[in-house]
Image (cartoon, rainbow, N blue to C red; front, side):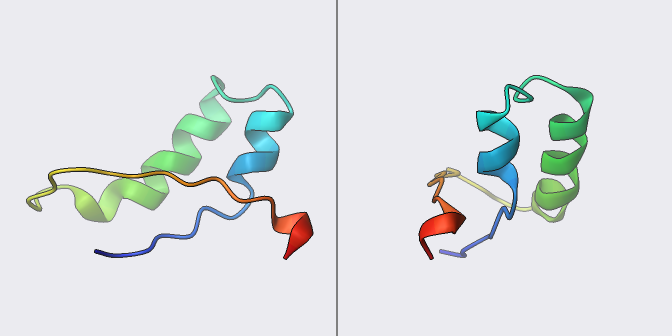
Length: 52
């Protein structure tokens, strides 16, 4: 298992930008390294960075 921080993703979703090209590009950049690897599952846990 690997942890992959998605800094800023929660804020983008909360600001109703979930279905924008900006978020699509953001996720593509983060997840690109998975291409060509055997991946069975991706789990997402969105944390509020304000409480950290």
